Length: 73
Image (cartoon, rainbow, N blue to C red; front, side):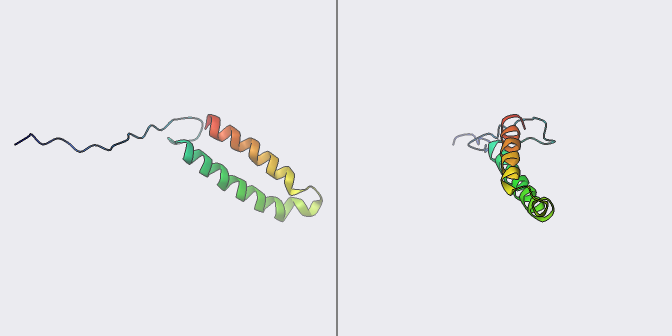
């Protein structure tokens, strides 16, 4: 009979530490970016857009922030 071996996960999680306060992988950072984009858009449409600026400005700012989060987060 062969000796018993410990069970191991087939793929090891290789998280990364950036400026976010936790270890994240790429999917985590993309998910965080999407949630921030949705929240920022809702806040923009409620409070800023009635004053005049278009929601497209918020979208551009959110995309730039998303690129920063995914690259460096």
